[in-house]
Length: 466
Image (tube, rainbow, N blue to C red):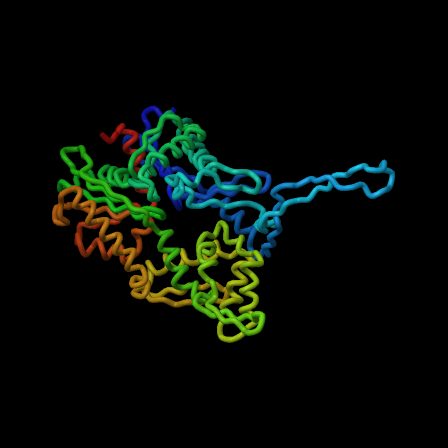
């Protein structure tokens, strides 16, 4: 059981990783066949069998590619009543019972082979989200993330032989507005880790873990203060550490619910919504005249952005106005045909995948193309256009940096080194924002693995927060 070893587990919104430290060498655990980074995804099929990681995503795509979604009414109850007998062999006055089924809204997708869950970490601090339906069974959030944590534990044990305790990462602030969201989220995480077989738990803030990783690999780093900016899929986490000798303490922390997922949703809204009918008119025949109103795209928007339930748009109340707009013809016809295809073939997850690829391409090139042949969309964009589009989110990043510095009672000049980590920190505009404030003191530090390695270092040295 990991005697003499430090173990760190980073369960992330988008991806997860784990690491082991033996006092000299840090080893990342191969959670996937091609490396240490595992998508934080869980897939549950109709037999309630579970797949995790990349296998979960692959299964979801295989089961839904090109599939026509057919929603049928769901029986939610039955009513029995007495009726008069109608002859036959019954005695005079005999009564029969007639059973009538009560149907709910047509939201049961008979062809759905399984449910895919991603980003579940974002829900942990929401007290109003307690269970999610998986076919006919309500699943607690804890039950949805436990298979992921179990797989991580098994991956670590294949390297170490067992786990007696581990340092487990968490954001400074979980997403949500509830004042007690952090306590609730940590309680849920702790329960899930226990079910996964990790009972001795040491929760540790993710940006501090990233800093611990950097200080381990750069023990001679000069200066008193270090700032970590951990910009991931669901949250932006920051911390300021004060170094003294070979140790450090925490001067300030800050975190907000802003991450790569929010950028993806913004791109979906700005780039794809106008191509799916947003802002167009809807003409239909009334009792005595033709009625023209604005197409109610707001009824579709949230369901399109929440790909896990986009299939519920395949109901008459949504599809009828779409088909009427297609029949109307005109310049907007192609837009509504695209919307029909997204709904009919459950394409929202695919659209988000293409958006992520597009966003990554813009980090490497000045111009990239959002190419979605499934709905005949091809949008070329310059990086400068992308940066203007996400400027409101960049302003939130800048404000978060100001907040953590104020809490530490420091100025940018007081910071010796700035660690830029997390997948969203690779966006050039984020790098430019930090460079403009801190100059050459900004360093990129293992964007996808710094937290896991830092947790392993913290676990080995038994680092605790006061």
